[in-house]
Image (cartoon, rainbow, N blue to C red; front, side, top):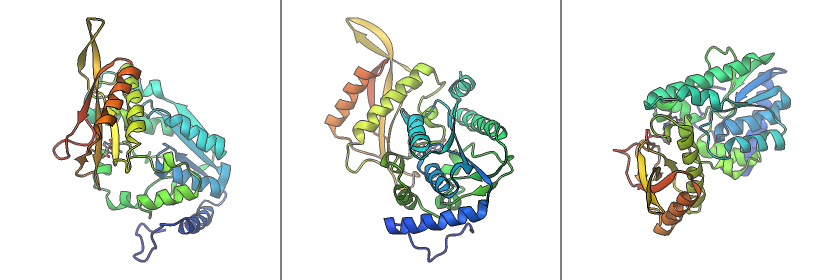
Length: 323
Ligand code: XMP
């Protein structure tokens, strides 16, 4: 398959077209891979999930998925990957608990791009280590989609510090590389993936690592993970939902008062934006009752947080993420 989408290629908008695409890809994957084995880094994002589901259909247990938990994933994500792929689809899934390894490497590191580099490099190391334990792998599955090819100089490329190991000399299997995101989603649904995976909002590769502002500490990381789950649940009730909505936890203290005593806690920032391409973005108006529910839940449920802020900044001049 070339890297150029033919001008007359029909957009996959219906279940019927998705089923046809799936059938064709299964055939192509089988032709490419023969009786070989494929390795795939499965983050749980829509692109890698759709590739995993396609490969499972095409080659079954000759696919090995590796899910690296770097400790910076959102609440419930590793559990969902295991449930959907291992338990429901019967995938050959290696779950790597690398939480301590990543957090130890990141300890005391406050500079955002250095954090990104550490996370990217560590991911490659963990993945390469897992790959080296396996015998007979000849192919590497990848969730490349068409905008990744078109925008190799764009926002995503600029941010994606890691990518996958170049020194792993595997032939690539990229079954969705000519599809746009909306088409990948239609295919994902046709493959039986849950909506919560298929319609997941964009999530940066370094994950909560760039939302736990400054030097990451385990307690603040837990706080932002819990607060983020509340924000996703509450703002997820909007119709339509914003393009991206999440929490960040700044690295300053916030004074609280309880039983007439002052104490040091943290502030959590709620952010919701709409955008077309992530190059510019507008803060989304969130109804006041929804904001106060979020505030009340975060204060009641998230240990250490005593202040909730709403970020109304547009991009430019503020970026979408806090760092
Ligand atoms: P910014 O903060 O630059 O974000 O306005 C634009 C979009 O990119 C996402 N983002 C990242 N994605 N790795 C990624 O894969 C990263 O390091 C990264 N940083 C930001 C951000 O969530 C937004 O959608």
